[in-house]
Length: 431
Ligand code: ASP
Image 1 (tube, rainbow, N blue to C red):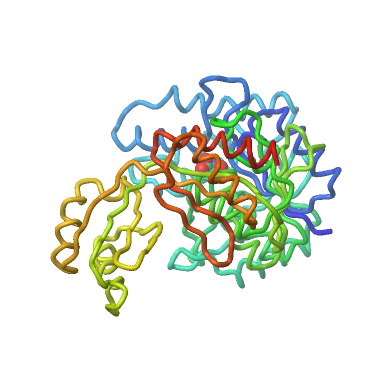
Image 2: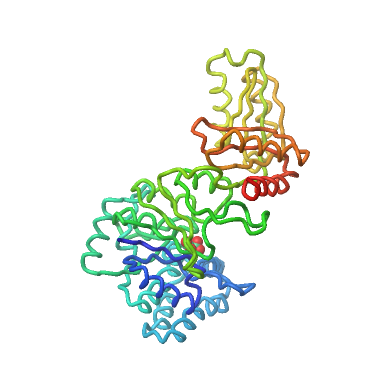
C-alpha cells in the first residue's frame, strides 16, 4: 500500500515529535512523508511557529529593525532537535548561510519556505529517508495552479531512485525555479497534491487531534470524532467552520479518488477519521458560523419576472461580494452574505437594489448559520426543530438542497451556542 503522510507543525515541533514521526513512518510503511515547518509545542503557552517567526523576521528586515532575538529563537528549536537526536546535519552553518541571504529585497516566498526546508532536512536524517526539496518537484503553473503532469513525472522519477522520501510541504516552484507558496496551512494541500500525483492508495494527514469532531469543542464538551464521511460531507463541515485540514486540501485527493485519513500523531492507536467517496449515513456533524446578514427583497409577483434574481445577483457580483445562500419565496428572496463582506456597503446595496428592482428591501442582521451535515430523515428534522422550539429561538431561515448533503439553519447570533449544544445533545446523545 502506497501511503503519503503529511505531518503538521505540532507533530514535528520538537525531538519527541520527530521520534513519534519515525515510529509512525516505520510502523505504517510510509513511503512519502510531507512535513510542515515546526509548529507550537503542546503545553507551552507562548510558543511560536517557525513560519510566523520568518514572516516577522522579514518584516523587521524590511523596516530596518534589529531581529537578532527573533532569529535566535527561530534557530534554537533546530539546535535543540539536532542535539537531542544526535543528528549530523550542520544546521548551524546552514542557518548562518540562510541568514546572510536575508535582506530588504529577499524573495518573500524563499525566506518563508525555509521553515519547511530546514525541518524536512533534519527529519529526513532522523528517520533515515531521502530529503527531497519540493521546489524541484512540485511545479506551479504561472496562474498559481499545480502542473500535475510535471509534478507527477518529477515525483515518479524521484521515487524510482528512492524508496522513502521526506518532502518539504507548503511550497513548490514554477518551472523557472521561482519558489511559490501555498496558502497558510498549505502543507495539507502539498500532501494531497503529492498523493494525487503519485496515485497513492491513501493520504494520511497527521495532526494533534483525533480527527474531525462532530461539533465545535469550544461549544460542546468532548464531541465525538467522526469515524467516516465523504469528501462532500467534509467540504460542507469545513466550509461551515469545522476546520481540521486546509479547505482546499481535499480537492486533489478527491479528484484522484484517494481516501484521506486524519490521524493524531500523539495517539496513533486511535482510529482517526476516514474520508472517502461514499456519503456516510445519518447525522455526521454540526458546524456553524456567526456573523451573517440577509438583504430581503420583496416585490409582488417577482416569481413571474424572468431575470429578476439575475439582476439582484449582478449587483453583488459587481461589488465582488460572495453570496452564501439565497432562500426564496413567491414574492421575494433573501440574499445572505457575510456581515464582514458588506461593512460600509449596506446602505448602498439597499438603495441600489430598491432602484434597480423597484422592490422593497429590508435587512436582517446578526444571523448565525448552523449546518447539520448528513442525510437527514424526517425524524431527525423534527428533532432539529424541537431544539429550536425548546430553546425559544426562531428559525430565521432553513435551507436544504435536494441532494440532502446538509440542512442549514439560521438563528440569531445570541442563540448560536445554545442551539449548537442542544442539537448535539439531541442528535448525538439522545437519538
Ligand atoms: N508552515 C506553514 C504555515 O504555518 C504551512 C503549514 O504549516 O501547513 O502556515
